[in-house]
Length: 160
Image (tube, rainbow, N blue to C red; front, side, top):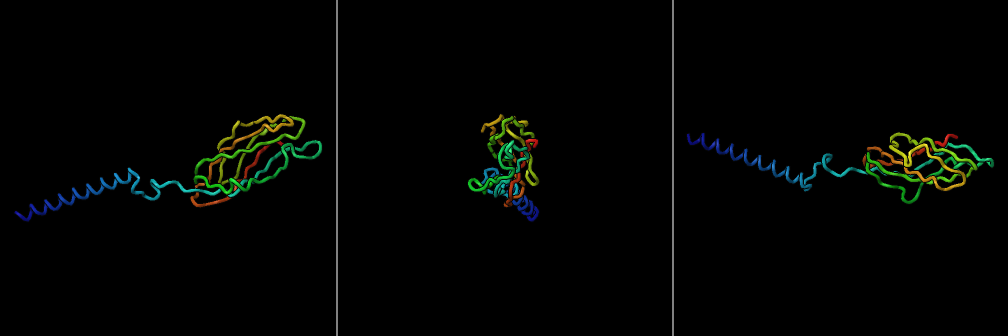
């Protein structure tokens, strides 16, 4: 009989100890002291090494693009730039209209693994002639590849 009581006591003590351990671990996780990889660790980063722009546009009477060169790069500070992998970030650019007529920016897009989520102001964007006032901000989703890097290709379509 005495042996039975001891076995029950041992199992009860073991169950209480295991429960206390689980509760302590949950508290440490909740406080951020104990980190479970992939669950509550900070998100990784993706490095945007540069931006390569392509502007689809017509030309002025002297053969120049309405907004300047059809291709240009954004390199140097702030690039390369670390962004949250799979997160959103913003890119701004200003366009000058070198033509004597107004032109509309109708679409802004990119190639995978990036995605354009929005443009501010929203398209179409009317750019008056001979002005530097067309500043646009593009919201982009970065690839969900922690530790990855690459070039962001952005195309601005002005219906050329």
